[in-house]
Amino acid sequence: MKTSVLLSIDSSFLEETLKTAWPSILGFLYNLAFAAVIAFIGIRLIGYVKKWSRKTFLRMKVEEGVARFLSSCLSVVLYGILIFVVAGRLGVNSASIVALLGSAGIAISLALQGSLTNFAGGVLILLSKPFTVGDYIVNQDGEGTVTNIGIIYTTLLTTDNRKIVLPNGALSNSPLTNVTGQERRRVVITVGISYRSDLKLAKEIMQRLFEERSEVLKEDGIEVYVDSLGDSAVMLTGRAYTKTEDYWPVKWALTEAVKLRFDEAGIEIPYNQLEVHLKQP
Image (tube, rainbow, N blue to C red; front, side):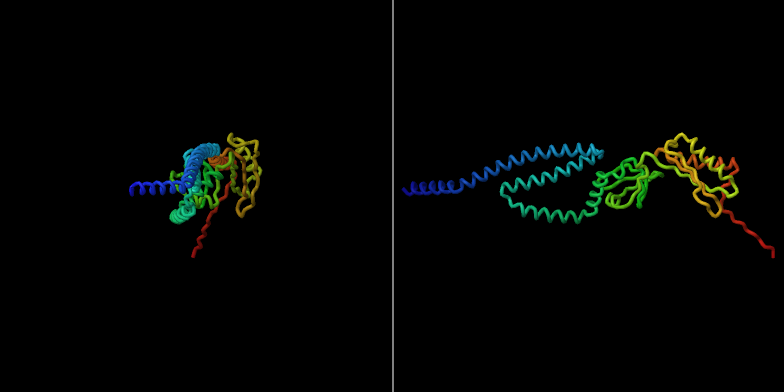
């Protein structure tokens, strides 16, 4: 008799408990199913955005490794947002998670402050493209041909085969000159001739020297003129355009040719001389 009464009480208590908790269980199951749908759709969308961003970076002529890294960073951010959305749907207190991640983020940012600055500089360089691999750049910290643009550092190769590694943070925030950024460069040759020399003949010789070089772009014009009248020489300048890759061979060849032709024509190129007079006692 007592056993049947206890069973009756237990079954009644269980039934009442189920009736009370059933709406909460249904709500949780509904939220769980809805969160699963959100997670499924979010994962598919993130995968699509990752592929799209990678193709976009490649169309912007960003290096493949860098494009893959940037698209991965974007997907990490999107996954973080998705986690917060799903957690919020399941009733998890997202405020505490945000506070925890925020504190961790501040600590990590302080520890990696320099690296994050370089990372931001690398992204800026890759997107704005002040220079690309193969360009010759001049910066206050060094100069050389760009061999690699990484996320943190940019590598230069100097003319004497030295490797210079520059942090992207400093490189993106300081003035630099992209020497080979244009398809053509202007070659300028300046030489001083004696006041006693034939100025018109010197100009004609320099004009012919520029015209004889096949690398000189004749359609852009050749200019030969008197630049200034110095203390001991008339400064004669010739200038013309050539392709960037031909700049140094043309400049060196013209500089040598001017000296040889002027010598042949008897045109004196003055130089500083020191005269010493000894007085007999």
